[in-house]
Amino acid sequence: MVSGSRSWRSGRATSPGIHCPCEALYEIDVEFAEDTVTRPDVIVVCGALEGERIVRAPALIAEVISPKTASRDERTKFQLYREEGVGYYLLLYPRQTKAKVYRLVDGEYRKIGDFQRETCTIELPDCIIDLDIGKLWSR
Image (cartoon, rainbow, N blue to C red; front, side, top):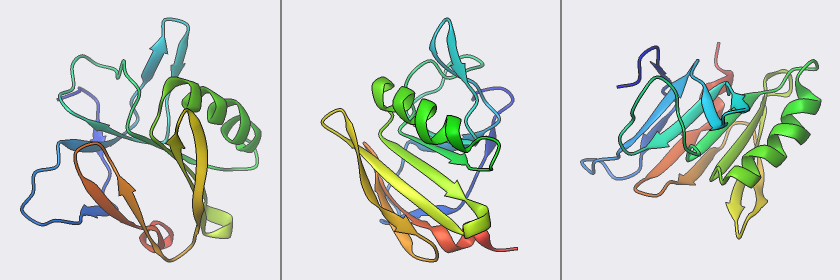
């Protein structure tokens, strides 16, 4: 287990009883290179974790967008995560109760769609997760 990690639960595996070797975490660093470290809002990693930070591309990264972080999250991190091979990138807009979901296909992000209260299917390497976007906005 990665020290300092915290679990985040908003989705569920689509096939009950099937082991999903992926874990959602927040407040943890992702080191893409010695000089490139980010701390995404939420990540999903699959497989065994080692050490105190993630040193490989997560299967999914989600960033909560605010006016202060919008440009960095929508442009700079979008490009970085694409180049580093992050499988899914979710941009979460709490003010608009909207999520933009992108999937990496042939080295480019392709938009799956904009979601507000729908369920979005995330196909990770070893499991499929139905992510209930509407639960993100529940208060």
